[in-house]
Length: 309
Image 1: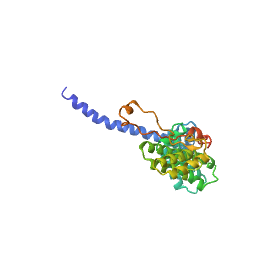
Image 2: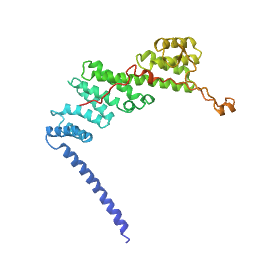
Image 3: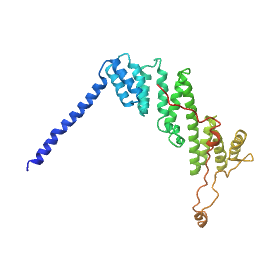
Image 4: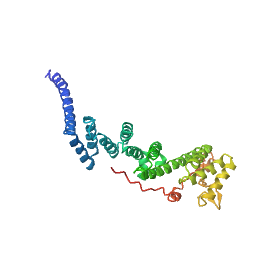
């Protein structure tokens, strides 16, 4: 009985390395099984995994193909397939990294435009950009990945304007541009809430100057008209209001062709506000969001089908 604890501890000490060795052996045998056969056999195995949407197995097999046959006949094609497999597995950052690697190693490859395109696609579906396609409001989120995707597609079009992927890239850039412009209006609305009216005006002006022909432009002009009015820069406010009335006479902030500076504000006072003589009044709510009215006009809802191999 006195030796039982010592025996138990000793047995654990012996069994743990055995367990580790067993796991390592299992992993090794899995890798051996994936890489077993000739280069063509491994490649064909990877193709079967891709066709059956077994993305993780496809990734492992393509990696094994590249590692075991680095100078083989299927190496470059396997690298392109790996970009797509990572994307379909939802490993978007790995897909972008693989595309970057292919572009760096094979800048003159006949299919390098596909790597440029898939780099944009992986960023497009990553985080905020992907939520747009799922009908979530990506304009309320960090636009970082949307900007990356836009820049990647722009690089594709700049280098390969006649690429088979150019038309789809242009559609996605339009979608992303509209998303980024609307994000600026959301920030302006936030600045209204915080009382930072000049900062709101600057956001509106940036959209007007840099994001022409997006459905956010009408609201950008309304932001400028309202914000400049609130900081007593009436001449600039009047200019923005006139441009809005001339180009978008049906904007809801206009009343009989004139800008309604009370648009979007709360007029009802709460009981607490009345009792405290306005001490706890909330800041008037000012929010411009006419997507339902203008997005269809600019064909914002584009038919963006997932890419195919």
